[in-house]
Length: 477
Ligand code: AMP
Image (cartoon, rainbow, N blue to C red):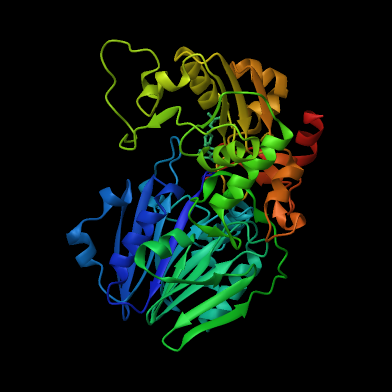
C-alpha cells in the first residue's frame, strides 16, 4: 500500500448520463490526484470498467465514455506517487462476490490495513493490488451478513484510519465516511439523480445542487427509493483534516461548511497580524498562495501585485533543452515579472513548506528578478509530522521544519524574513468547526487516533517501517 493516497472520489446514481457526469466530476477533482483515473459504471447486473494511468482527459474519450453504459457510476482519481505506478492499484477496484458485484472508490489511508491484509491472506483471500482499499473489498465479500448494508457495517467495524468511500453495487450506491471524518465527502442532487463527491466544486461543474456533507460514521445508501441514512457501529469523533483548507481542496469548494477561499483569505489576514512587515507589495506563489496573499494584502493595506505568472499548460514531463538553462524546471511553471519586482520590498505568500525546495527556488527566482528584499510568509504552521490519514507528506526527516528552526529555514530558502501562521491563528480562521474537531497532526503531532504501529509499507510487506509516535516526538524535542 502506498502511503501517498491523496485521491478524489465521485459517484452518480440514477442518471442516463452517469459515466459522462462522473467524467466531468473527476475532471473537477483532478487536483486531488493526477496519477491515474478510473470509472466503473453499471447497468443492472453488468459492470463496465475504464481505468488507466494518467489524467482524466488522457484516460477517457468519447468511445470509452460511450462504452460505460448504465445509469450508475463511481469514479476515482489518484495522486501521483513516486515510483509506485502500479496499474493494478488504479481505482475504482471491483469484484464479483456472493453478494453481487461491487466497485469501490476510496480516499484516505487505512491505518490497520497491513494487519487486516495478513489476516485476510491467511484465511485465503487473494489480493490483486497493493492498495489498502482492496482490504475493504475483501471484507465486504467475506462478511457473513446477507444484506449489503450490514456487510458494509461489518467492514467499517474492522477498518481504522481515514476513509471517504463511494461504493457501487447492483442497483445501489453507498457513501461512507470514517468516524473522524478525516477526508471530505458530500452529497448532491441533479434532478432525480444523486451524486457523491469529494468536493463541491465537482457538483458545480455538472450543475448539481449541494445537499450536505456525509457525516462522520454515516453510511448513506442510495437506491431507487432515494437516500437512506444509517450509522456505522463506531461512534463519530470528528477530526477533520485542516490541511484540506490549507492546500488540498479547491478554493471554490465548500469544505466542512465553509468556502475554502474565504478560510484561506482569513489565514492570510491573521498572518498579516502575526507577522507584519513594511513592504511595497504582497504577492502570491500562484496558485496555492493566492487566497492567503489577498487576505494578507487586505489586512496590511499593502497592495497586492502579480509578481509571477504561471504556465497552466505544463504537463508532468517535458523534454529538457539540450543546452543547460538555469532553473529550467522552475521557470517553465512559474516566471517572475521583472518590471513588477525590480527594486521592490516584497512579501511573498505561500500556503505551506514541505521539503522547502519549491520556496527556495521561488525566492531565488524573485531575487534574480531584482527584488530588494523578500519576506516569505507561510499561511500554515511548520509541518513537522507525517500524515497517516491521506495527505502525502514525506517521511518525517524530509520535512524541512522537522530538521530546521524557523531561522534556519529562512537561511535555507534565502529570504530576508520568514513568518509562519500560528496553530491558534489557523484554527481561529475557521468559523464553522470548533478547533478541537480538527486534525492538526502534521503541525502539532497530536494524532487523533492511535498511530503506534502504523507501517509505512506496501501490502506486500516491502519497506516496512514502523512508526513510533513516542520516539519521534521525543526526537523532535
Ligand atoms: P516543498 O517544495 O516540498 O516545500 O513543496 C511545498 C509546496 O507544495 C507548497 O507550496 C504547496 O503548495 C505544495 N504542497 C503542499 N503539500 C502538498 C502535498 N501534500 N502534495 C502536493 N503538493 C503539496
